[in-house]
Amino acid sequence: MSLQVEGWGVYVLKEKLKLIKDRLKVWHQNHTQNLDVHIKQVKKRNSSLDIKGEVHHLDVVRLEELHSLSSNLMSLSKLYLSILWQNSRLTCLRERGANSKKFHGITVTLMNSNVNILINANGDQIQGVACVRNVVFHNFQNHFQLGCSNRSRIGNLSFKMISKAEGLDLIKKIL
Image (cartoon, rainbow, N blue to C red):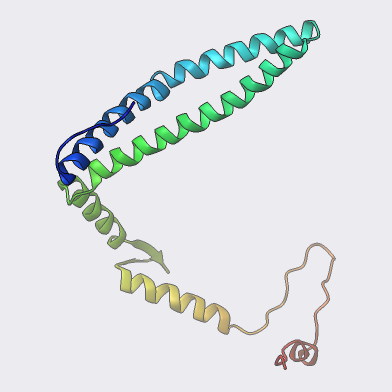
């Protein structure tokens, strides 16, 4: 397991990094290869112990195995999800990054879809970001400038209203 390389400084460092990389690849394959199959095997064993536990009481050894299987299943599942997330992230970076044609195509499509806004305001069709912004602004401006209106009534129920003096009493500066 030693990483003995002879030569001058930078060469030794480079060769040791290559050896470490190779060993990490082997370790990664041993620990992550067929991970989904390994998870299925752990689930199957866990299920069989659960079924045995429902029929008969499990001895201490089997209970410890059941608990370790549950713990192992959680750690394997987390590892599997982590690997899936990393793979999806790599795929995303490969396909959309590095100023690729696909990345620019997606960006242009999104920009075009954001610009082509079309709304219907008072029977007129309004298009374009600036025009839509003005219509929305004026709609809310008119809405908030309206005075108090009669409240809707539900059947014969009437709702209490506060007076203007009481309303002004609600607005005070914090000292």
